[in-house]
Length: 470
Image 1: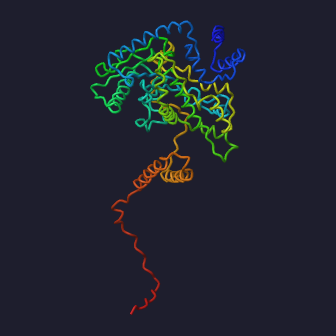
Image 2: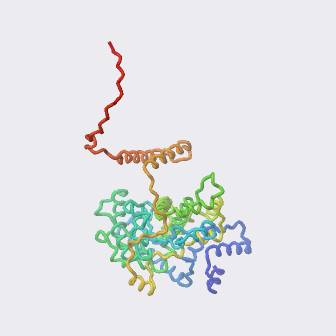
Image 3: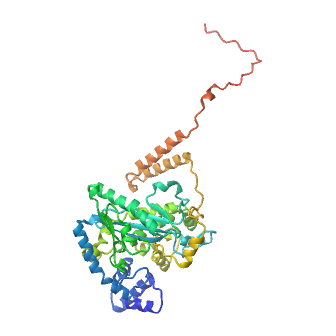
């Protein structure tokens, strides 16, 4: 920490990789053996000293720590007075996500930068995630993009695994958050308590912890069910210390998304080793906003219940948050995936990529110039985002039927390696395609059966006598 303060004091921007490398050097000089500056260690180091978004809080961090204990007592008192159980206390937080960026030293990333009209590193969205204190309920993620109807999802807007909104800079605004609160958060909390907890609707209640983000309205605008669902704001500058979603949950979720992203982009066919780099570029070009939506939702839904519950230990029990299990998500786990796709990535580039979202704001913070630009610019909310995406390829029903048959054969051949339900699920899809094939066949009009036939011209040849059957 002394090293870190010295670097920041002279104006040096300190990234995660610099902290890890310095820790390795210092541990060697101190005489500590078998020290690994893992991502888990880096996360705990930042949490312990109140480091957030690569910026040091300085003296403000110590002052903010003094507010933690009184707030914790206030929270516990409210829970006791209102009879709230852990499954009725929630926390939500927004975070920016750069959804299609890749390590900048990858060949595919360099080639992509040469493709006209593509600015991958700026393809960002804001995402809100949250859940309750015992980890039994996680709400559907909320995504904010720039376009009202992005091309990749405009046909399935009502069937997404997330709630989608849009704003000028893909940020959460007070209007967006208020709408999310009343339309989605409240409804999902009521549904969970009625069905999972078997609580009558007129007895449903919840307390939601929020930080002081610019997009969060005053508390009296976030009240529902006659005050039985309401919010409580944590003290300023204490977010990194006690807010549950900041105790490793969002970080673990983003790592899960990045792994889903790389698994999809880096997949190559075994028979095309000589074109692996080109195929990685092709995979990146084909990675759409729709893919990102499903991958981030999958990463969120796949998170362990214990990870969500453990994040509350600091604020509820004044206990150290257990180390987030980053097994399978450490830097070396990612870096081993690239050579298989014909890519070489430096450790420094990988560290930058894994932390690319740390400084991404998710709430609306506009400069005066941006405010003027926002007011004077023509409203383009209906313009489609990601105009550089390829037009959708139309797949015929016949091809879909053929691909299903091929996949069913593959599943049968590798049955032990496939999920048990894969075969039956694919059979359902195949049946639906067959039904569509039958329903899409052109039916003959009734008058077509009465169309006069062209008369057959009389034969000029003499017919051969037919042998008698007698």
